[in-house]
Image 1 (cartoon, helix red, strand yellow):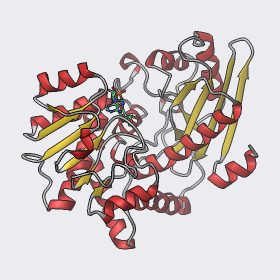
Image 2 (cartoon, helix red, strand yellow):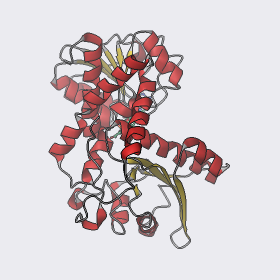
Image 3 (cartoon, rainbow, N blue to C red):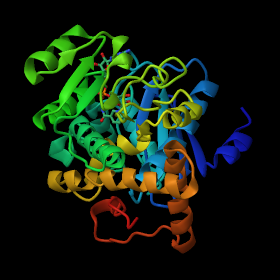
Image 4 (tube, protein in one colour):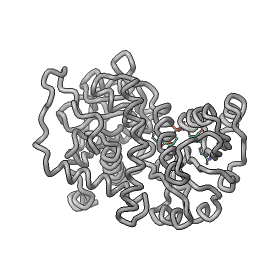
Length: 373
Ligand code: NAD
């Protein structure tokens, strides 16, 4: 890959390569944009087939974080890190501590967190070397499992969609089809059932389906039948790419809003949904509850404050719909525009990044929190 060309095209500020012979660390940190604040994004550990593959992944993921944080109204930028290695066999204390030392050397520019292939235990090793990490253990001020917050945020986004479609945000007596009842999906079904909704579920894991049926009173449907369920809302909470050529014509719902990342196989399927009159809540805006929750760690974790911040997803989704209407564009495009407009506006007024709160211990970021949009 021609790195400068690619990073220039995607708009990255900085790409850093770290290696440590003793621990075997081979890591890349990509800082996409720090106009809104320090770049926050998880650390992925994956047995990449090549350096090129790892680089492409970190460039793509870090850019996504810029948009996610901007739309979430956080004063955070976008970044991501990858470690080349097998999370099953290549982990060690030394590996994560050397990674911690390296990201500490980036100062206030990058904050790491858990992602695919890394856990809270790995974050704890990193925390021994630097405080530029969130998602640590609650005894160290960490926020614990993000999925209940992601589920709650998804519910808030769903309410904004209901209001858009029907002129009222009530969940009661509405029907939902939820694809995937893992960490987020199960919590979402619980919240929906508590509000008196009818919920259909599917999952490749039958034990999880049984749990949702037995404990929450959901109704099970076949894996493929989930696309044919007649309901008000389809909530993808498992995989990416599920809104595609095969599924769009089958959907018998008014709204698509769920927690999965990259739901649209490509943007055209988001447009196709809207052409069919289906309201679509852009995935990275509706599933930002987990990010908002860890962002609160930077201020000293407080569950009530995290819940309050996550509830702003209703307003964020509503604002995306307004931009879509204003500019005559589909919602998936409007989400990107909201992010870009906010970054551009703040970029004009922002002074170079300075510590606003000097007495905060070892410079943990003051920047998480809601913005004024
Ligand atoms: P999870 O692994 O706990 O749950 C996913 C569930 O989907 C599992 O139960 C799995 O068996 C099921 N599944 C897999 N393939 C399926 C298929 N083809 N059909 C139906 N079910 C299938 O993951 P999670 O943490 O609940 O995350 C769900 C989605 O939300 C993922 O796309 C994730 O990237 C995204 N997300 C999660 C969070 C979070 O806080 N956990 C935050 C943002 C986005």
